[in-house]
Image (cartoon, rainbow, N blue to C red; front, side, top):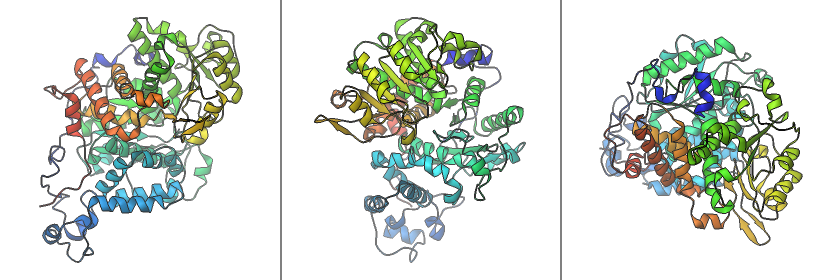
Length: 591
């Protein structure tokens, strides 16, 4: 990716340490919450010591019926709670029972968000212990519907809203957020939410959901997470006409006005939170996503999950699949449907990995990778009309207008969908893949489920059970000819929480491509023979905290190797160090 972004930076690289920035700032755990063991007593600080009715309304310290007799006396809770005392485990059992009684996924989402607003630790306890069941609720696909209806279900702010009205005052707005020790920011402008398009200010559901996963899956403290939506308007006429729309009712700002606001935002973030705060760009439109990553990659700790996170998780699946496919990455040919942020980001990381392993220049390794966009196969005769991020993929070939023609001509062993358009891997396309390969690898990555290029059932049926299949959103296991296939989910949640946590625990000040490769390698190494026997190329999400610790350790190790880490001395065992730093949601005892 560095080779693609470097020309946009006038030749400047991440490791050059741009003179436009200086190392400084950062955060520390003022109250020792990270370092406290679960049996140590902690003080429930807000501005003063929380007690009585205030304590029950404070989501970070509220334990509901789990307050002990002694705690009820010392914190003036007598009479404010029923006499019964429940353990956290019993509370979890009751809430999961209630959530499972909802038939509509959006109702489950609302119930979980309400729980987070009243009892933070119980929310994360539920999410960690029931990750496979609840991940599709707090993340894709349900979060997409939540964003579409965010204006209707909005009850209280869960992050910061920075609009054009705040221009010139963004630093003041950041200071309005009650937490000072922020380590991870997820920010969106709402222009390209999943495969749903421009949702404007209602895109806030994405940063909120992503940061919930940073905590539950990666171990970053909730208080260190800040969701932000930058509202520059929306081009979605339906929202502009909606009387309940919660954002600016104007067309999107573009050009200088847009980039000036982003420049003020990025400068204010560094001024307020220091050099080591991670800013994750989320669901920006293609034309802005690459520009922002190129502009701030050498001056800030920035990461784009759509470009880099997706690429890393897909690369991990490809590396793991080699045990089933045979050969090395260099032996395979890749064809993409979709040449936007995700498609070109994945393609570049694959080319970089092949280059790293073979010492072949990345310009050469790109020639094993072909992309199809809305106008057909990207070839050299189209180069003049292509957007800058597509140009490296314009190879010599006759023009082809359909995906089926491209599959027949290129004969790829791996077909990857990032088009955002459902049912584009037709029966003819999948059968052509099966005709060319004993075990075709088909990755239908577009979200949400309705936008997947094909379903698991279709992939297995049309290839007579020979396909290795993975998708962006979850699909149920499918039985074909008496064999049960478990579809893999190339879920970014495997990568970004561990990657971000690795950057935080090492005190990294920049994100480098080698860190993405390190994250992919750590994830691929977690796939066992038992998983391969079921056709899986990703490990189960039930082990995600362990997986995240290994990814964080690998990323931190690479940060130290590259000289980008500032937390010294380097821990002797980075996996153990990562596990020891992880937030745990078990209730604490109060003085």
